[in-house]
Length: 274
Image (cartoon, rainbow, N blue to C red; front, top):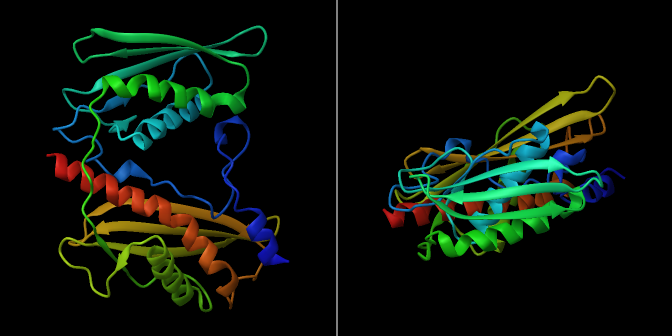
């Protein structure tokens, strides 16, 4: 029953800011708060300003979805990093009488010159993703893309810490296997130009029953500098993971790999562009 519940919860709900939260253990995007290299000096990139005129949770959601849509199209984009050449994307939103969200997007150069503007009326919150995808396509021709093929890399999976039972060993093995399945070379020892992934688990009893399981995967380069993290969490029945992690280790690792790979590839692309 526990395993079935975990698998049912793996589907990622994109619209986190609209009353729904990303479901447990399905985090596949990197936390780039520790990645100041996101927009390198040799790349213009796009700085996405927080949206104004809407509640904070909606503003944050649309801002981060826009950043992600641009990054997926090869544009160095961020909501908190830029350089002297970065384009600026500012947005303002307003709810209409029919419930639609009117958004005005303005793309400008660092000197204030307007590159272009567009207006979208989003009929419902679930259409946010479609809207930001269209905006990203509109911006891409104006931003220099990073068409640099990242070099191959290897990853060493360090021992996982904090898990009870066989969790540390099972999670380490599952992560190494999941990386290999994603065509990533896994090395026993990290070379200077390789990368390291290290996981840490914490389990906290909840007042209303169950255990809150948190897993953080820290990504580092070969000399130990942190690039970012992948954070996952889930609530399970009390004691469910005290001994055996076998049924859940593989899905947990598989869900984290896309974010780990993306974080490393972005790092390599930006280093190569300098």
